[in-house]
Amino acid sequence: MSAARPLPLLRAIAVTAALPLLLTACGYGSEAKKDDDKAQVAATGDKKLSAAEVRIGYFPNLTHATALVGLQEGLIEKELNGTKVKPQSFNAGPSEIEALNGGSLDIGFIGPSPSINGYVKSKGSNLRIISGSASGGVKLVVNPNKIKTLDDLKGKKIATPQKGNTQDVAFLNWISEKGWTVDPESGKGDVSVVRTDNKVTPDAFKQGSIDGAWVPEPTASKLVSDGGSVLLDETALWPDKKFVITNIIVSQKFLKEHPDVVEAVLKGTVKTNEWINANPDKAKASANAKLEADSGKALDAKVLDPAWPSIAITDDPLASTLKTQSEWAVKAKLIEQPDLAGIYDLTLLNKVLKAAGKPEVSDAGLGAK
Image (tube, rainbow, N blue to C red):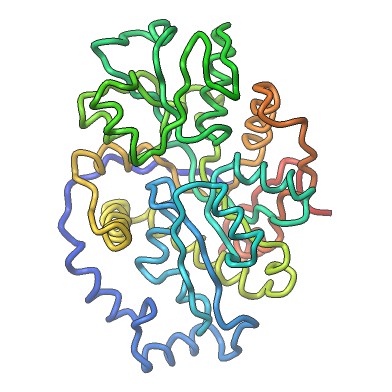
């Protein structure tokens, strides 16, 4: 299995303004000049791929750094030999799964819980996980005036992004292991689990309507910048300090009809991950530039700088940790025991990794037969 390399602590940088010139000069992205396109064809071969476009979904979260940087730098589209990328931004896993099911999305970056739910509800017919993308980047941030130790969470209001989402499942499992009880549907119990959209959570925290939150980056660091304190990094709960936070999934229909396009996208994501890990400062700026392009506002350095190094970028889907997370969801009575056989198809990823001289990765026995 390939090892995820945690991003090192990063310095403030000022390269964002230079990125557009750099991208144009390199021929990346949809604005590349025709001469650069010819050079790209020479590098990748003159055979066009089987689809004119590929629709790729992602969240405007730092845990989706592969998508943010790969799109911003043109590293994904560069591998597609003229096939155009149509990016789509989502704010919740269920809406991305719905788009995949409805045929308006081909490939998506998404968390493990929506992947499991989407696969199980379709009885294994609608998606495959084809790669990993990120590990870590989830923290429990609390009001230090109200909560000083983990035991102090009892009786408090703690936010998670959505009922049954990846962080919600992890928090419910942590509560259970403390010996406390919470009704998974209502969120009421020894701890009040308040399902709150990540965009709303910082305001709720500042207003005092919640006492803390179990959330991904950059929301966690936003809460810290508003006076919160990190009480627990979820990474500490995992034996190898690694757990899947972002997968890459594909519509089974698209995978069957356009395997060449899927392989090209994976070439792009593998190269993107390599570039991110080799150039963390530039990658941090690139991800922030994409967030600004999508939302109209870049992340402040006091949020971006502590958030970025807590995320590990990896091609490995860390399949055994997805299996564990599914067991947690069953334990919390959010889902029935799922049949996850076939949820992974890492054939194309391992082909790309092997060609790049990288170790192949495991599906933990959950691969397509």
